[in-house]
Image (cartoon, rainbow, N blue to C red; front, side, top):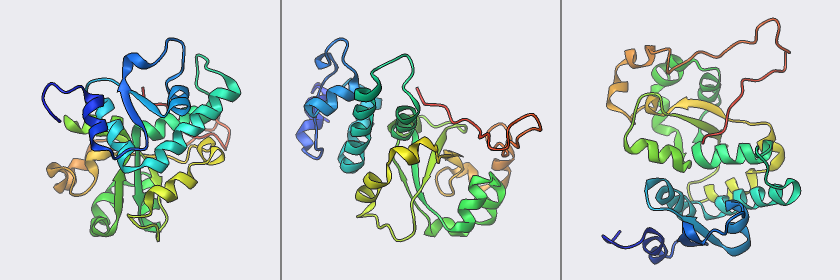
Length: 234
């Protein structure tokens, strides 16, 4: 990007997104960000890495980003803007900010979701050469600029057979309110991904239980269907 060029102007010059990037000041007082984008096709954009990476996601995943925005706008039209987003908007925000798309084998997915970290990331390490991942969340991308061990992303499984070229179209149809309500995310400490961080070449990297936490089993007082909450990313 050219030095001294406002970020929205530089992003628009790329002409790779289905939306137009505008200064944050163009967002009217009292109008929700997602509602403004849906109504105008314009994305209020601040200077800095967070909104820069958001713009890159618009460029790389235009259909999925439009789908997320439409879901947000529909929920705003239905329920208004309150102090809390509501479950669909909350899950859509978690996805938008923090999702990692992953296309694993059944065995690898089971180990990851059961948080058998050593099995998934050490014992099955050879599988990762065949496992596609796409980092979607722009907040996660921003954190990766100055990485630290506990950065955690939310995995969203991509079926085998979805190609790199088809990932955006597949994702746009997969982002459904009923699925988002189930919060089908599973956490993954991002720097544990084989090949993503030099220190994880040593198996001892995964011994840190503060980061690679085991799956929490429901205690006797919890309902059998109770799930561990996945909170929204601010």
